[in-house]
Image (tube, rainbow, N blue to C red; front, side):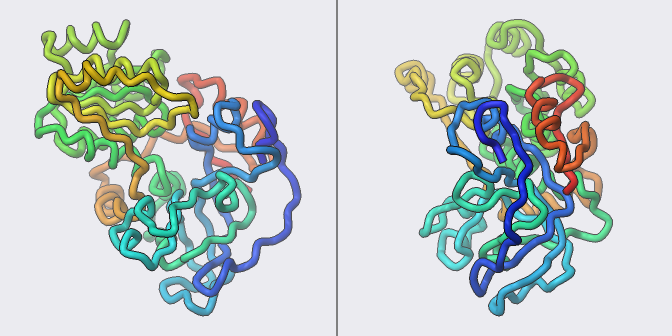
Length: 337
């Protein structure tokens, strides 16, 4: 649990019960720290005291309600980070953000956190995915959020084949966005991050590292035209400013980073005058699985090199502190209960 800025504790909790006739309980085999969890750790977003966190987890089904049809005790499963009711027209699109009852995020105070030994999962038939044979835990964990988010961000950037795409921020989601943009046909991906080692990781994935002030560097790399699309995997005021300034006229800025709760001073006149499309996306994780699972299984989309560290769940405080360094060495952490 996160008890305040920089304060993580591991505590005993009651065993979860099946959350209704369509729910399940999953014993957690592996979970992960997401960049958005760090907003709680850093104090950008206040959850209140003692909220169990974590929305990326996989494990083994321990129990199911009587209405669950697709899963049984003993199945190895992963779950999407955002949940819906699984019954409405919105959920039928594969996007729980459209759920008529409202989407709920694990580990945000809406649903229990996945950084635990077991988790109650509602609407199990909608929410869970059986882990394909041969898929490792790192790849499966990326399918709970980060890879789906990078993929959705690249899709919604809507660049033409051969186009130039900028990715701002090269944490786990940004690196997934780099690989996704290339898989979707980008001719060039310019990778931006203040940490040189993270730019090197992006280069290993096929990107061109960009150094120096972002706008000037991107304009120089594109002959003054700007990029066809920019994917902002950070969403600070400064990166949003850079994204809007270095995208070409009539280009698209696709935002997948999590902004804090402060209002953003959108340069609306400039954005209007340059006919820029601005898209903000919470990934439709469930919908992405049909595309991403085969790509990952057949090696068309790499998942290696994103996770850099593994800790026991009991050492979560140490793990969070390591991620908070935002170094080249520690990009993403896997936790084992």
